[in-house]
Image (cartoon, rainbow, N blue to C red; front, top):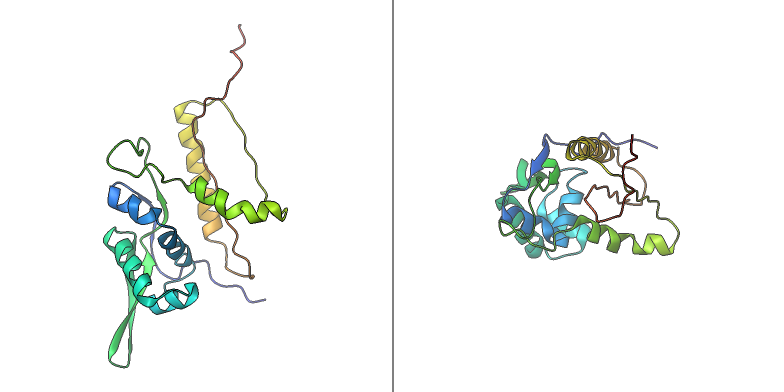
Length: 190
């Protein structure tokens, strides 16, 4: 089985912090999230994206424009097809993230922006079919430890993103760290 080169087929930054409400709103739409996912594999034209999704070209073009204006997509190359210049779009970063302190109550960010909600919806069928692998753990950590762990998780996401594309099944990968109100035992007295 031939292996593909690590995705995608264009240069992009490793990470981009979503610092504006427009960026978060742009990435919050399920169709736009799907477009960003497809562009992890390689750059594509609006025509290719529309055909892959079975959606009208005008609808896909609108969503590509929203993502481009928000700075999440860019034209990575062009080619001449007859008298028309065809544009190939690519992501501006491998990983988009909300910086610490960004939440729905500040800066106009949408309160319903939640990757885990998306993951829960996407994984329901896999759960029913017993094809869902996952863990949840709780640990008491300092802010510094949590930040260091987030960096390690981001590296793991980068590794997942760089895997050569093969097979017929698209797998989701959700990872996160978040504060909870889980109870904890008191420290042991010396």
